Amino acid sequence: MLKVATAVFVFLGGFAVMVLEIIGARYLARDFGGSFYVWISQIGVILIALALGYAVGGALADRFRRAGFLAVPLGIAGVFTLFIPNFTPPLLEAIVMRHPPGEEIPALWQKLDPVLGSTLVFFLPCVVLATLCPYMIRLSTRHLERVGTISGLTYAASTVGSIAGVFVSGYIFIDHLTLPAIFRATGTLALFLAGLSLAMDRWLK
Image (tube, helix red, strand yellow):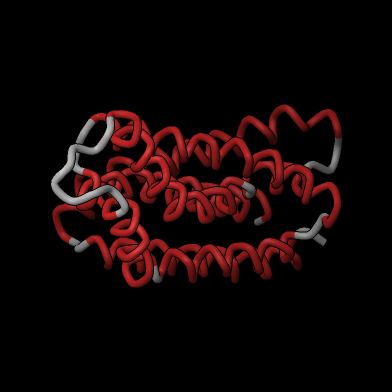
């Protein structure tokens, strides 16, 4: 039961990260255009968030050693994602409108403005979701001789979730859902993971 729950947990976390990355690039394009720089910015910011989340997740797991601790950060990430369509448009507009109207945006800011936008909107939830893999590896490892196997399977499950997130986002969500609906669904998924983390405390005892 524990192995299945852990696999599902990190699968859904990986899925959510990739939905935010793929759909996020489409969302940023409304303010910054569909240039190459938007995609580079989105990929780069998400990778930074993943790196930080992996490091923080491992450190937190060593200190707290219970899945229920994840409920609070996942809850915050979930609520944040739910309301992305409500509070982020003025933030992104402010980034664009700070340049004088009618003047060409300097080349440097054409590259950095999407980075700022991506960071404001997607950095926090992706950092939180990235903590799941190292956290669950620490909690699921009862014997040192199994660390390699558990680590590999955990990251494999998360990566499969990310693969699913890419194709579901690109082939299904974009065609059948609005961007606000996608963000609300992803936020709801993060809240579900928060509840699941509380339930997993019982299974990890």
